[in-house]
Length: 495
Image 1 (cartoon, one colour):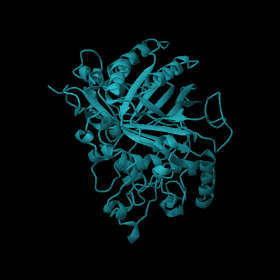
Image 2 (cartoon, one colour):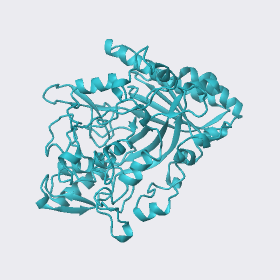
Image 3 (cartoon, rainbow, N blue to C red):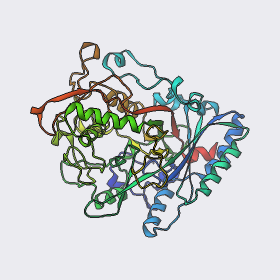
Image 4 (cartoon, rainbow, N blue to C red):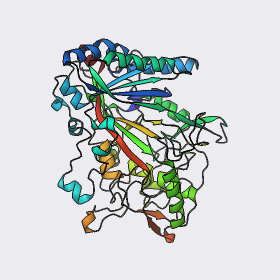
């Protein structure tokens, strides 16, 4: 009997003997929780050898090395018992729709239409044009060269070494193995960035950050009983009625593997986007926004992100208090966006019960599981990193990865209907742009439309102060990417 993907996380355990154990042994890791390694290599491939030769490489070299979800959670338990435990190298593997076609497998059997088309297909419908929900990404011709070609697969390697020797050796091995059967289009290197903060309780608390200096990865869907219990025990939220529930059922991220006959063989759709972050431009826009709205630069930056740099949610406070809080709901605390404006990044991507004409349950089904990692050297004094680069326009940013059960219903909906839509959510009737919409503006952090103004509160929590229109012009630019599927381990072993 197939396992039930609709159960709440309180019913889903990863330990041996769990009803979900067989599923987790067949599922690739990093989907239900981050694998925890600090350095990653992403190898993008275009197959050139015979399909039979490519299949043999996947079956004999890649499949045996894959980290399963079951092994990942087992390693997590071992690491909790022994902080010096070394889980070793992480290997994961993903195929695009073009990759499946190359192997002789018809991707029409997949349920996600966006995956089948691929990220380069930026076609819009009439409704997208009318209501401002079209694809506003840069055209593929403007992407970095490696992403303009047909990307068939991506190998993800992760490790937590001191000298990176093991990771670099693994990378060279992959390059040697694919010689003659694939072209390496691009190799990306990601490194986790962290900063120590004194929150008044734990003076050595260390949290992940992104290149603009804000704590990142605070709000994530949680899929298992173990992780949900740890979330509450760590004080990241409370389960009191009316507070935000981070829990999610497995159906949010898992999809049936159509090319495996195993009832418990599942995968997940992976969205990959290389996002360049122009630090100097972001800082300039924060300063200009502060001057235009009469706020301090600290508040202006928080209004763009939705949190202060130390993670304090703007909806909860007008000052940074170093509180790692995630149990708020915008509808109950700030329905009209006078504390945390409706355009703020964390509100655009997760409206928390403020989506017009949408139930909280339906809204929560749009969530994604983010697994991104920064690339490039950070600016000095941004984090605890030893190697920095003082050039504010240097090549740095985020290798954005997210998992979901359906690309168009989750990532693309978030990006197009929420993030890049100037009418969401304040324009309740969703009046088209040509009829005078644009009440909110796009997401000032990751929005890809450079021509939309946002409405910035002039004073925190004070409707009488009014709002100021200002075009933040997001300093984040898409440099390339692709839609992939994370095949089940039985599929990989059976090729």
